Amino acid sequence: MDAALHETRHLPARPGEQVEIACTFPGDARRGGALLCSPQPHLGGDLDNNVLRALARALANAGLPVLRFNYRSVGGSCAALPGVQRWEYWKGVAERGEHGRVLEDAAEAYERAARLFVPALLGGYSFGAYVALRLAERLALDLPLVLVAPPLGRLDFRALGARANPCLLVLAEKDALDPAPARDELSRLYPGARVALLDGADHFFLGREEACAAAVLDFLGETGWLERFT
Image (cartoon, rainbow, N blue to C red; front, side):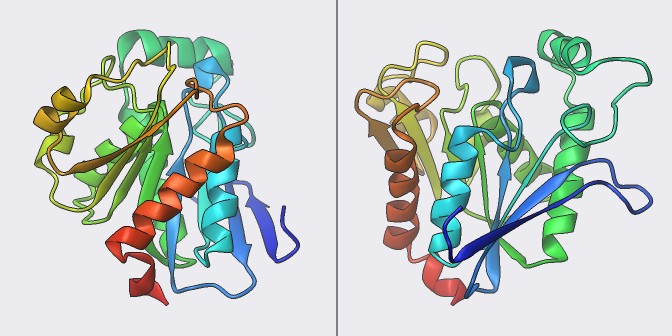
């Protein structure tokens, strides 16, 4: 963590809380902030994922406080089902595509973020990109979206094509898990989205985390979104 930044973690403590959260704060914060959604826990995803931490650090250095969270049955979050372990539960979620509790967790994280700052940006990595899009639908959030390595071929992203607010797709050139469609196909399906394709990166962005974060900051600068929350 950079010297000018600090991070706090909070386990669910109040009635109705289910998820563990981590908040990264800059020394001089803007009034707007970001919520980032974690990748699929069945594949090892949690709020300490390398991509999420890099994004949180970059956004906080730009003045935006950032909240990340663990879904139920991950880390310090509550168990999703009594007696059911993380891997068993999340394997079932992945196989059946039952995302009700997932969206409840994301909605709780959004509400807790709103106690700390004005949510101004919604993002996610891999499965978290899908959760971010579905959360924006669920809560009717008119916020810019940052979707990193979204599983466009595995999950339903059709709603992205109808969104008018700014959206960035950060794609990895060598993504073997979720290969990106051709650019003309992306333009047809998601006409309002900007695309940043990182040469040489794979799905996990190992060694390319800073390039991913830089693409996000460029997007926010080009759209003028950061200036709205000075």
